[in-house]
Length: 85
Ligand SMILES: [Zn+2]
Image 1 (cartoon, rainbow, N blue to C red):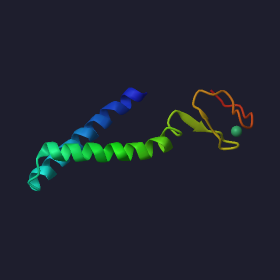
Image 2 (image 1 turned 135 degrees about the vertical axis):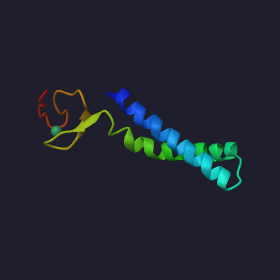
Image 3 (image 1 turned 90 degrees about the vertical axis):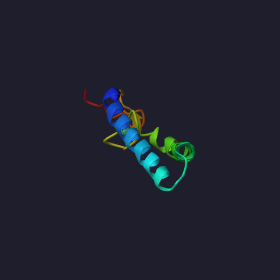
């Protein structure tokens, strides 16, 4: 399942790299400086977003009480609701 997400992410990254490169050239900036700035900016964004996203990926919400439980759970540890499949 996750490997299916890898290709679109790779394409998006290449598009972002191309955009940064073109923007750097347009502004008369050295592409390396632009990539360094972008890397620092994306790292900071990642650090901010990661704690929120890690609680969603690989989890599902219980239909009864909306508690986030691991995707492969057979039942909700909060209310005891059983999951199909
Ligand atoms: Zn529940």
